[in-house]
Amino acid sequence: MRFIDLSNSLENDVPADPPGLGPAIQYMSHKAGIPQMLAMFPGLREEQLPHSEAWAAELLQVTTHNGTHLDAPWHYASTMNGGERAWTIDEIPLDWCFRPGVKLDFRDRPHGHLVRADEIAAKLIEIGYHLKPFDIVLMNTGAGSAYGSASYVDSGCGFGREATLWLLEQGVRIVGTDAWSWDVPFSFTRARLARDGNPSIIWEGHKAGLEKAYCQLEKLANLDKLPTTGFTVSCFPFKICGASAGFTRAVAILPE
Image (cartoon, rainbow, N blue to C red; front, side):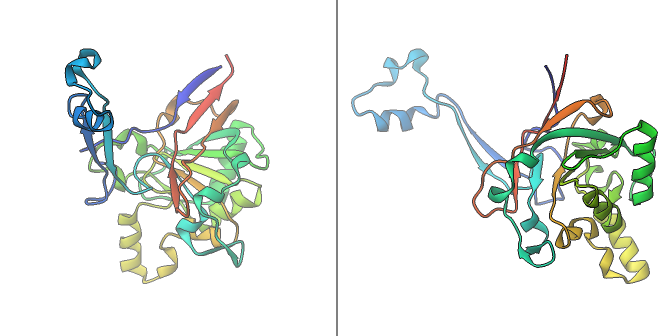
């Protein structure tokens, strides 16, 4: 098997979220860990440790939406499927998270474009693929090339209610994007809201889950290295009790 890493690293000082929402990682070196180790083993002396080193460790201050992650239905609403209590990330069916993958290339669409269902259907015809239930559909919007820059959160096209519900009606339960959000970047939504005064466009792709439950993989990497089909996606989220999302080491698995 061959593996392609679809995940971005969690890093300090790398623009990947709006200002004030990024992670903070405090690193403890092997030397800084010595007082902790000595406190746990009374009588132990620093010079008795190999190379006079203890453990390294890190303290994280993050949201569950920093880095590559999987959104649970609880993220977008308190209910799903027309009224059921929405699942949190620790309640997501694990069999959703290890399934055949399909990549669709929307890099030809401009930033802020709202992708329609017929555009998705046309891309599937173009690659000669018919969606199957539980396929994981990954969208290469081109935003990934801006990852780590100030323009990232405003990059890529997005997917609204109509397109999302169309995918869910085909049996898809996990979708993914290289952009900051499954939806159109907020800067474009704000402009449309100011122009038209229609609040239904706010987060409309996510909110489609009120009708049919699904999960979104966001901030994916290396989608340009994937074939259109013929790979499996592994995207098991970290199990955080009652959370709206979980950090995810998303990986594509290809046969040699």
